[in-house]
Length: 210
Image (tube, rainbow, N blue to C red; front, side, top):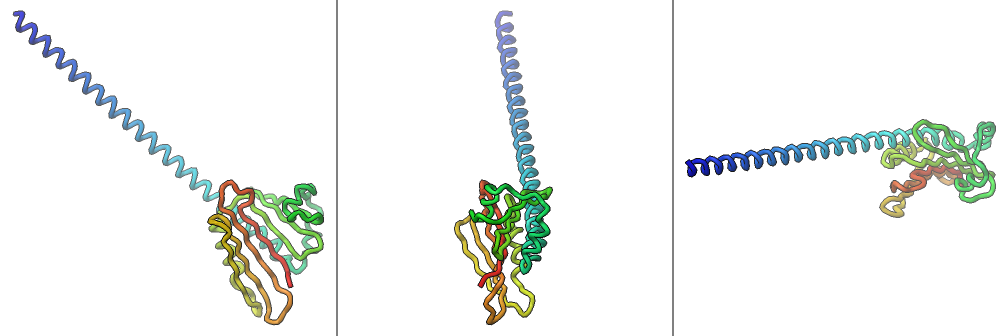
């Protein structure tokens, strides 16, 4: 009887050990599944956040193009008329305006209301130049819209393109619209900076030069 009792106890211990091992394995699998689920959820959340951010930047790029098309481009040959239209609107304080006027003393800068981003329109005094700044924008969309708008000029004007890659993040692209033999020409320039910490990601300027 004593021999049988020892065997029974040993068997019981084995069963308990097997149960504990199985339980631990089950808990381990459950933990791994929870970790995997959390990782997948986190990945989906990041992807969704990136998608929303990209969509917003694209909208910002579209707003940017719309602003410079309806201001600088439309009034390039009559900037005084644009200044008159903007005269009743609030402009930036002189010290802040300097940041958008290349530190020139004279001129005005206007914050442009837009639900997608922050934009500033700058008009230096006594100069045939107009500028639009975008704090954030999708660079690819900005460049595509710029090329689409200025790569072809209305006849009889001719087009000359220049591009300068300052760094992997910074690019300057320009289009000159000119007439053969004429001294004056229209210069449209786009400066972009794709760095997330850039204070300005896109700058458009339109000017008449000789």
